[in-house]
Length: 248
Image (cartoon, rainbow, N blue to C red; front, side):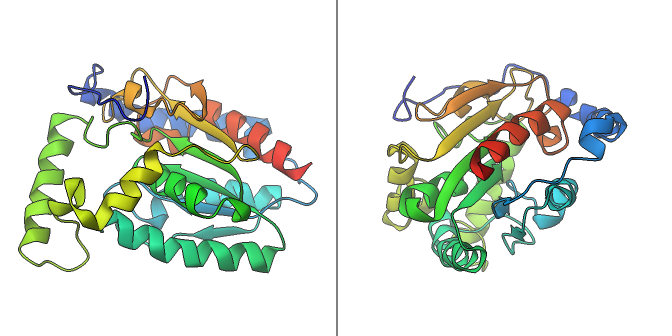
């Protein structure tokens, strides 16, 4: 499947599987190696980008863990991720450039769900500022391959955007000119030096896992809820590998 192909239908996994989040967090906190990560020399900076309808606080556990490893961590500045994708990426590109300059080297981008699609666009637009990209349950192949309740929310927000509600995407973002460059970024190849990983779960009850299979990224399967990818132990082990490779 390529990024140009559309994934039809809602996720096969039931949405009640998202109730696993608390258990996934407990497993992370109970793991002694992950709870107290080793400090890494020359740890690259990391930019975290939250998912749809979420804000930076949703990635607080990951931020704390990364900082304990020694990474300078910067957040997206979003209280809730519902804005026009093109506008968000344009703003984050300036943020990324400043972070790379201040840290003295390229940055690792980690985005959850919609945040991963935004991170991918950033990696395409400014590859010199990026050394790694991790997308957590991010539907880069089809942004609407989501559960029925989430799709209803997307359509409601788009209508509010059409009515002029500030800070909210509109229906034109799907096929209109405003986000044409962003849509192209989701199909474009990634620079060879960027280690890109697409984390997906077949038991994801929010996003169809097939929509996460970016053809230019290494697939990494976990058995996780969608929301729980930000606290799942197997995701953190994948992150460790990418982060360690970037620190070498």
